[in-house]
Amino acid sequence: MDTEADLFYRQIPKVELHAHLNGSVSFATMDKLIARKPQLNIESSRTAIHSGQHRTLSECFQVFKVIHQLVDSEEDILMVAKSVIEEFAADGVKYLELRSTPREETKTGLSKRRYIETVLEAIHQCKQEDVDIDVRFLVAVDRRNGPEVAMETVKLAEDFMSSSDGVVVGLDLSGDPTVGHGKDLLPALQRARNCGLKLALHMSEIPSQKEESELLLDLPPDRIGHGTFLHPGAGGSDSLVDKVCKLNIPLELCLTSNVKGQTVPSYDKHHFQYWYELQHPCVLCTDDKGVFCTDLSQEYHLAASTFGLTQDAVWSLSQQAIQCSFAPEAVKQKLEQRWAELRPHVL
Ligand code: 6MZ
Image 1: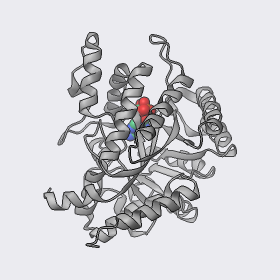
Image 2 (image 1 turned 60 degrees about the horizontal axis):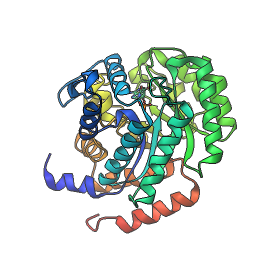
Image 3 (image 1 turned 120 degrees about the vertical axis):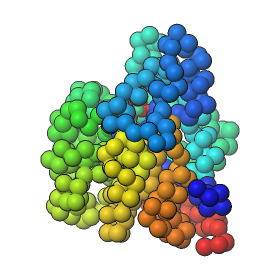
Image 4 (image 1 turned 30 degrees about the horizontal axis):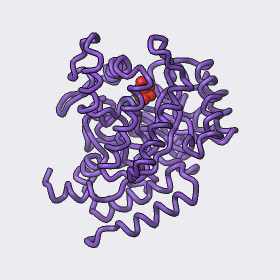
């Protein structure tokens, strides 16, 4: 990639809406974690998928298991969350919605409540240290853990929504899409929606989720993660696309993640093109910048070079992402103002 163009993508302000905390850990932080836990004997090659490497989606989920072994205490979570936030800020991200699955670790005495408190503490510390980024948090439900845990997680998220000064804004549904069925999670998701949590749901990440996507769209979600197999060309349907379009539900699209995880055969076949041509709101995101060895500037650059987007079009993409965020109106207005101030003269 040529450096001058690269600079443009780095310099423009960006919004990141789909980033899993433990998937976003950089090499530098991973090295520190590995050094802290030599007894685990984990090599850094097991925690990331490097350029040119591909893994099946289920192999990607094995990588998260390794990372979870390395991040299992309050101290680890604080370090990981702070460095992830600082790295996004260094990449020009001005507004970040981070998501993570609260975990309980008996070995270190970590509870799910403490897990969330620690992430919020990291966000707070970054703010105190004037890191130039507004960070919000989505509590994640891992579909593998079933309906009871999902409901427990929603209740926890509800508590934090009212006590976190607006930092906890929503709920994510993620985890291995081959495990479990969304229909069992509907009561929990419905409850989250009714109490005012915004819903960012992974949907149609694999082909067999058509029926599940129909059900989830009836909630409806406020944003869709991936949506790789929603459209007819990928085995989805016109009725799914119609619903998404009528409800104007933004899509969070993660090019490198989908190509490396092999749910999309190559960058030029990415469903970004389909939705972008429909002029549907699409937000470029990283998903797991650590695991997939990318960052948001690189994702913008890849989208531009693959689909022939002008710098103007890229700018519009970054600006439109503001309205797709779960930030309160006043914050969106401030971000719009910032974008106006930071708009490069060349555009
Ligand atoms: C679905 C994913 C994912 O929550 O421990 N996660 N879920 N599809 C994906 N596509 C590649 N990437 C990450 O971060 C790691 C967790 O995020 C979800 C999985 O549940 C994974 O265990 P946290 O911070």
